Structure formats: structure tokens, C-alpha cells
Amino acid sequence: MSTDLQKPTIQAPPVTKWQGLWELMRFHKPIGTWLLAAPTAWALVIASNGWPEAKLLIIFSLGVVVMRSAGCVVNDLADQDLDGHVERTRTRPLITGAVTANEALVLLGILLFLALLLVLMTNPFTVMLSFFGAGLAMIYPLHEALDPPATVCSRGGVFMVNPHGICRCHQHITPGVMVVIRCQFVVDRCL
Image (cartoon, rainbow, N blue to C red; front, side, top):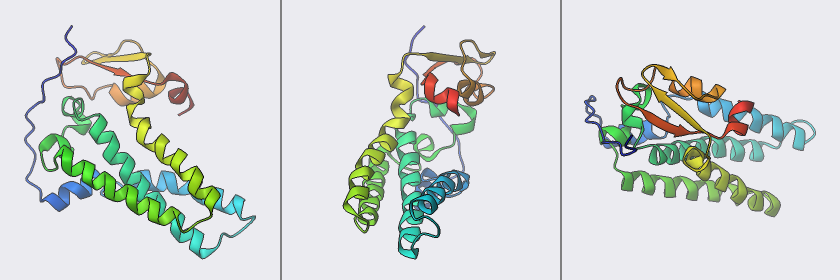
């Protein structure tokens, strides 16, 4: 079995560059932002022993939006060779050509710079922790390629599975295409 995937030709409605960038950051699907905002708000409430300062609430709220967007860009860059073969992801901007990989990298740089500006408005300990957090956000999308347990998906379903792999792969792979997606079992078991 060859592991080389040919980039499929995807027909998608034409979009402007700005629409492509908007979709690359997943602003049209805000649920991910809300999923990050909830634990961030809880952490702020716990750390402040009650209601957090308005300044911190604004900084961290904006940080959630910026870093969620950056994570989406990194994810699409990491998965651009696979996304065209998955029904759910085949119309993403990097696949359709609405946004190039270089444009996505520039956008990622801008988002990370904005995140840095936001975190610099906090205390030195938070700034230090932010580099660790940003590092995790940047490498997490690569975990599929770096961790040995594999989830094998094809039209028939999942052969070697973990719970997250089933949700991600089942009925999303293009018929006739076999894709090996490496998954981090420990993290996926907790989701």
C-alpha cells in the first residue's frame, strides 16, 4: 500500500481571499471558541477567588479567540495532504486553493504576534506559561503523525480503533481511499 496521497481536485464555490482566511480560522464555526472559553473562564474565576478583573477577562477572552484561530490554521497546515480525502474537510480553504500555505503561515504569524501582545499585558509568570501553552497548541495537530498507534480508515469503517478515531474517521473518508491516521491513544481516551 502506498502512503502517498495525490491532492484531489476539489470543486468549491469561489470565495474571496478574506472569506478563505475567515474560514481557515473557523470563525464561521464558533463552537470551538466556546469550548475553549468555558475552561478559561473557570480558571480565571478560580485564580481570582471570585470575579476576575475586567482587564484579565478581556485579555483572556481575546486570547481564546486568537489562539483558537491559530490552532485551526496549524491544524489545516498539518492535515492539508489528508483533508482533501475526507468528506467533512474537503472544502477547507487550503484544499480548495482559496488560501495558499504561505498565506496561512503569514496569518499564523500575525495571530501568534497578537497573542504575544495580549499576554504581555499580564504578569511575568503568565507570559512564561504562555510559551508552553503556545507550544502545545502548535504541536498538538502534529500528534497524529508523531504517535505510533494507528487508526486505519477506509470506506468500510475503522479497523484498528480508539474512541476519538472512530468519531473522526467513520463515514468521512472518500470511497476507495485508504488513509492511515496516527492517533495519540492516551489523549484520545480522555476525550
